[in-house]
Length: 66
Length: 292
Image (cartoon, rainbow over all chains, first blue to last red; front, top):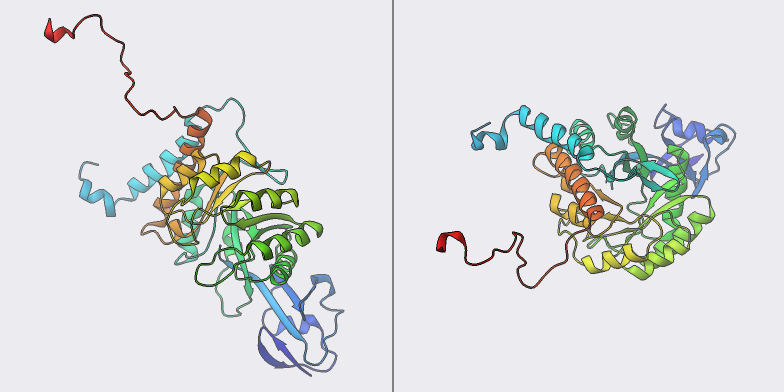
């Protein structure tokens, strides 16, 4: 299954969850938020939310700014 | 310290005495009749200097500058997680017990800003957001239409919204009516250091506002921050003026003093401007003694 994580193509096993997608980038959970196809997926739902082919996953955190 | 050539570039003692010592004194030097807390969205702050974190050369420099500024509220931006990044601005803020204010910097549309605010709420566990929807990369001026639309949606979604806007008294009033917790008019474009280009409009915003007015963007040096407070702003938000100063920590202390001094001057009530002189010494009967 091909998905996009932060703009880069990734191949994940069929039925992979948001948690698995986040794991591709970081093991840290605090200070991190995820949107799939422009909808926020709350941290508590990462394990139970399955991704679909061509989903766009954005994994964000706070950086210096403003 | 008698050698002035030395004081410019050496001496941590100067930093210690001048930034830390004087700044701490400044906050208690003037006597307010009552506690002079800044209250935004029901939350109290004793510092009226809100800091941004953009532009600092390192987290260490940022950390020192934030400490010297005395800030209790500081903005961060939301960006794609970089697995290679070392250290986090969040660690700095947590260590200093500074409340985090996520912004929506980099958003051009209401939809982007709303999504970014929701991601920030999820990541940082705060419903506060500095709403920033810019119109173009060249001026970074805020887009009033997209900003207003996003503000309405975010207020409806339970956010405490602090919108960054032009120095427009009408838009400020409309955003207050829409339920924003504060308004943040610019002094001049972001990072320009041009100071407050339209003090009259800032005064009008202050005059009509029922929520805190936070002067945001354009501050170049301490006198700009003092002027913002003298005009009646409730707080000042700045970043570049400190983070890109030659000595960020020293400038942070200067800003802290300037905001305190400007606030005190506002509360004290300045004298009216006069066209001609008014003697401050008592008048004398007859000619001055030297001519007698």
